[in-house]
Length: 148
Ligand code: 4NP
Image (cartoon, rainbow, N blue to C red; front, side, top):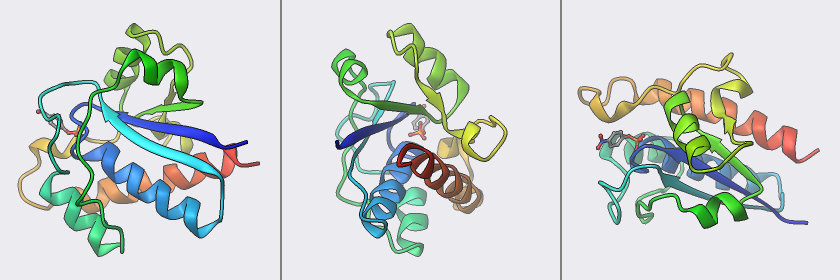
């Protein structure tokens, strides 16, 4: 049966759209049956395109995330998604407070539980490649684990 995965960060403009793009690409490459989406715990950026650095680093890796638009995570998401993945421990705590008892931390899938750094306050493009690498490794490990 098709499984659904939701990646959740704070704004849904930097980290989780990147994970969504990476996951969709990986699912396609492996012909797996997953529905992939992303959302933010905050409401500030609803309707916005991904931040410039995330669009650029995704595009450098052959992934186009330019058309996706930010949305806020809902209680329905928490009920409906099979797998909910937080990008950092604050996102995980916020999801827990909304009732997501079994949400996962992305960093547990290859980075010893580390938080994926929030690139919103990075200066320029520096740091986005590191964020991309962390997301790419952990997203693939997570999907491998859940597709067994
Ligand atoms: P994201 O990055 O959670 O990776 O999308 C952020 C985007 C916006 C803000 C913080 C983080 N903000 O404070 O508006």
